[in-house]
Amino acid sequence: MNKAIVLVSAPALALALALSASADNAKPVDSPADGPAAVVYDANSAFEFLKTLAGDWERSNGDHQHGSSSRAVTFKVTAAGSSVMETIYPGDPNEMITMYHMDGDDLLLTHYCALQNAPVMRFEKTGKPGEIRFAFFGGTNFDPKVDMHAHEGTYRVKDANTVETTYVTYSDGKPGPKVTGTLKRKQSK
Image 1 (cartoon, rainbow, N blue to C red):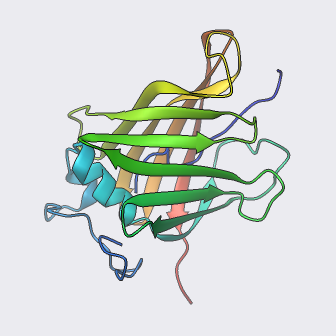
Image 2 (image 1 turned 180 degrees about the vertical axis):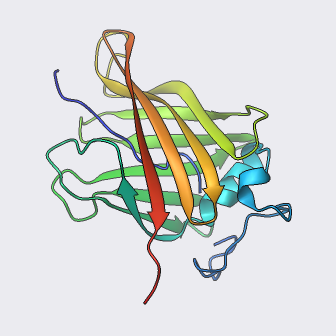
């Protein structure tokens, strides 16, 4: 397959503390006074931060792939607070969904891709403030040694309204170029 893929999550990969929390004033649990960019995330705190991303976002930078010119990304806390759903290109024929959820002590990401596969990534603690990283953990409907798929992603939290993303796809078992972008929360009018 020669198709390229771009994920903007937020990987993704990070990102409503409660279902009733407003996107404009949500904050991660136990965040230091310096905000979410100063947190050294573990799986639980990363998941709580992902919940604060609930709302509408716009992506800048990065390439537009899968034939979409959309820059829209939405996050929604769902399933009684147990999952975060990221919708990339909402309403577009090439819309993609990334689901984040805890599995015991592990934070998992499953990306339902326009390539018609579903790679799974698991949170890896980096020890770097503001960084939420996901590494390949398996998936369905593809052979990771051959087929193109999203393989890893890193989110760098800049503040409650800005997240930089980097994703790497693999094809023929080898990494492709890093694809980067910036997510900015759309401000309500």
